[in-house]
Image 1 (spheres, rainbow, N blue to C red):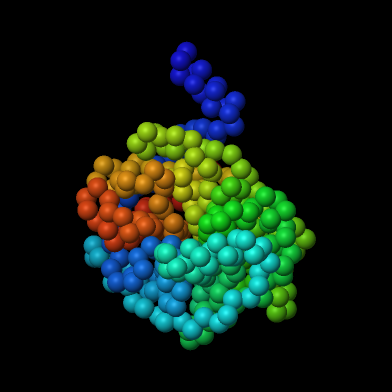
Image 2: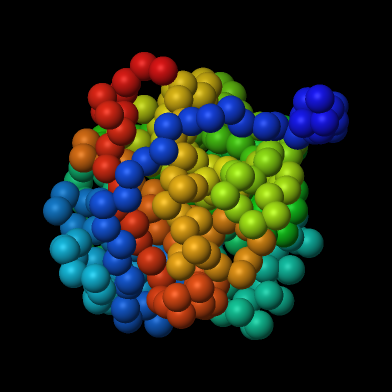
Length: 328
């Protein structure tokens, strides 16, 4: 009776209490060495190459060589980033980001990376709500995004708070449709399409905008209700996969409606005693979903976990039984 009463109180307070979901199986774990700013915050597969970004480095992205080794060295690709265009964010948000960059570094705050079939890499700047395109040759240019997207996102309650803007992105293989994930308070998903030289909404940009709290998984020490959030996106086999950081889940969604179809948890492996960090929130920031499984990267904010490891970590999980397209 007591447990039922507690559950009723949580539901009354608007807290999402997720039911049991299948657990993913961890295959391997890799520390990443050589990222100047640490703070791994995105992953992408471009052909046979893996790329990552740091939210503390404005002038470089990193190439990784996936292998069975316990430590992966990060190879630097220097990029010459042009001046950021005005995205339509209010001055107050932009000025707070500028001030914070003096303390932590990374004024552009790169938070996600994705690739199209031509080998172009797309990097989202959270601080400017802008997307940088890096060509196969390394040339960098900002996408021309119509201000409609920012207006619609803010009108739906997203992109209103400092350090809670776009946290991840995914692009289709043809390179003409782009999804962006707003992190929290409210979290959400928007879609824009390339129209000639400008990226714009095709009617309504906003696929999802939601607020509310969600219980951390039971394995989390002193689990509590925290803000629902997104940390990254991955597009695979025609489906959009979200990294639900605080819930320690990967969820499959319809790419046109953002409706959740199925979720899988990685909490059992991520919250093993030796892998725990002292932070009171999830640290998963990067996601790749492919036919064989999922890569999940951690932004440890330069902190050490229980076993003393301070470098960014990438986990390899096996695909669920029946594959990512399996029905519930």
